[in-house]
Structures are given as C-alpha cells and as structure tokens.
Image (cartoon, rainbow, N blue to C red):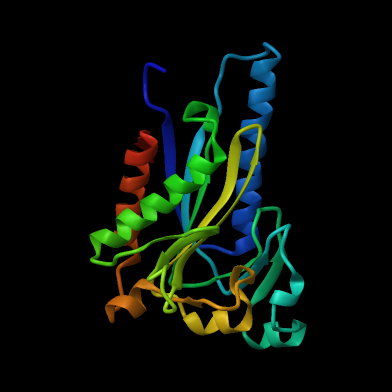
Length: 234
C-alpha cells in the first residue's frame, strides 16, 4: 500500500452505552456493506476507519461467551446504583464501564492494516502499556488472559485495562476499557471478565492523584497511530 490508512478520530464525551453501541453498529455495517460492494465490483471505494473515545454512565456489559452469574446485582440493585446492564456481541465475559474510565472503540478495516486478530489485540494492549509507561507505571500482559495488568506475574496482579472485540470480514468494533479515575467500587458487583482471583486497579489508584483523561487519551491515540501506522483525521 502506497499510503498510510486514514483513521477518523472522534471524542464522544460522556455518552449512554446503548447510544454509542448503536453508533458503532452503523459504522460497522457501513464498512462491511462497502467491502461487499467492492468485492462484487460495484465500487472502488474503501471503508473509513474510525477511532471513538468516550466515557459511559455506570453500565455492566456481558460478552457473548460470558456467564450472567458473574453479575452480582439483581434488577432492583442495578436501579439503586443508577446502573444499566447489556448483553452484547463482543467476545469476553462481563465488565464495567463508568465515568472516569476511558473507553476506546476502533472500527478498523483490518485489510487496510493486517489480517491478524491476535496481532490486533496485542497492538491494542501495547498502546495501553506504552501510555502507562508515559506516566511512570510499569505494566504488561498475563499469559492466557486478555488486557493489561500491573504486577501480572505476582499474587498482587491487578487489571487496569479490559478488552473485548467483535470482527466480521476483518472489520472490528468494541474495544477497550481503560481505568483512569474509575470508581473501582463498582467492580465489586461483578466477577470481572469471569476472573475471581485477581484485583482491578486504575491509574488514579496507582499514582495517588486524579488524572486529566484527555491527556491520557491523546497519549493513547498517538501510540495507536504509531503502532498501526495510520494518519489521523478529526
């Protein structure tokens, strides 16, 4: 390919989970429909790539391979915590999103990058690891588990970033939940990602102060653009 893929970056701010999901689905379907049309010789246009940054009001989401028993609240208790719950079409089990957590949704046509979902997931993790390093936090992976961890090879292992994606015809959606200033108490209402023997953490907990989420987002965006080698458009 002669030129870098172009990615349109958008900050959706604090947005209802279902609203962001519906928006992702529109972008996802548009990209897939265009790829089918191109394959059928009906167009030479290629899909747009999008990178969406946002935060959500309190919400628990359960992936298609997840167990609903990993949600420890009933419907009344969800209402008491002003939280919602959705079963969704990404991989993975249950996770929490809420204010103070940076959520990132790449809708990428991987045929413009590379056709390797494993590599895609590792690049997402690597971008988070590099971002944490920018702020003086050492992190890494835990073998056999998705996401980014601190002290992952010790009994003090704690997860700082969860990931779950869906892909079809090499188009991706869903993405990462990166704990920046997250209220970690909400994780006590689930068995995060179905893992009951490891803790969760946030940048705020690790560093002892509240961070500027926009600053973290810019660092993460830059690392993603370097790893995936794309040009940014807003």
